[in-house]
Image (cartoon, rainbow, N blue to C red; front, top):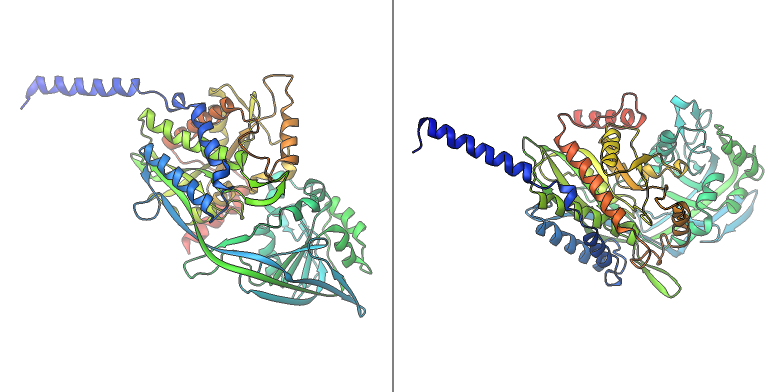
Length: 550
């Protein structure tokens, strides 16, 4: 036994040695390796995995690979039981061409529309065969935004009628509100509240420029999915909206013939941001046959347990799935998804490995999650956000999706940095790596609600996602042109593979920035907070609080 001053001496020496060891521990971001990111991408985006479609053999191989990497990084399994896998029960729905039809009857004259040319049917998750006949009412964008003095439902009765709406939201809306009100998660409940029994969606003038009908049709081959709740019911199936069809503008214009406004006038009013609603002539009959299949996929989840705040979770996500096989492009039918999102997953894996290599511990638990079914409507992230693992409560989400890193840049784009305290954390982290943050150059595409971070935001959890910037370090390189060419010609198509240019040095920097953010948030005295008066914080944080109190 050591007594008296000798005990104090040894205790002091031990403390000094621990302090010295901690000081000597490498910082996690210094352990990031660009070659490791490249190796992950080359495997995950290889033809062997056949595009990693949700619930496919290729996806299962990818999930097993990610779990093995998490285990090698000495992370704790945070899935079901003592595994890295969180099972996500799914219902797959595939519209069947022979059983779909659309006919408009006006004054005993019948107009028959053609599948794929004029319309695309939605899947019916509740019935293999569905038919709906109802009168039509046009309700603009299908938006009621009282704080913006916009109400497309004023002085109109939708009860028992099919609502005809434009996609998107008025360009005059502030970017955040435009993103929120563009989402069908916002529109469909409002339509149901006003009594609609079906929906016909037509591209708004601006959306038609961004996503031409030909592109919408080209991507319509992929089956649709919903996750199943504990009662085996599909979530967000919108049972009251029996059928939901998408029409092209040329066919959609026929609904407006003989109405209070023709299609050109309604489109012009939409461009001007005007609220509008009026009945359309005739009865529309929609029919759809859907092939339904119960299946499963999995999120892959691991945790680096925290210390004194271990029940508060900082969740770092990247979706692992892509589209699988599709229409052949130059003889290649495998949609490999290198940028979308093998690269994001590779960055996630290298962050986990670098954290373990450093040996540091954070106050809050860091959760690393490779997610399924993002391409099916953010399903894996929605399931995780509502069934959080690792015995804790999520307090922040850092998402990595489709970074598009084609060349070295001076900046990074941060979606969500204006909404919460995560913005300041991101600016500091980027600055520490020699980058500046730039605003979203294309806010009209409402990207902030089109990736997995939105699932966490809908639960009231602040989130942020960083991607490559536009300001090239080499003035001879036009990064904007590289991104535009990729989006037009290779995404989401077979051309998005590991053979395409990816700047792995910049990918490593993005991993370092995300690590700095995650550790800063995990060690901060308080949780991330929505900014005072922020629209998303007000809408979703309040809703989440009300759900918890029920």
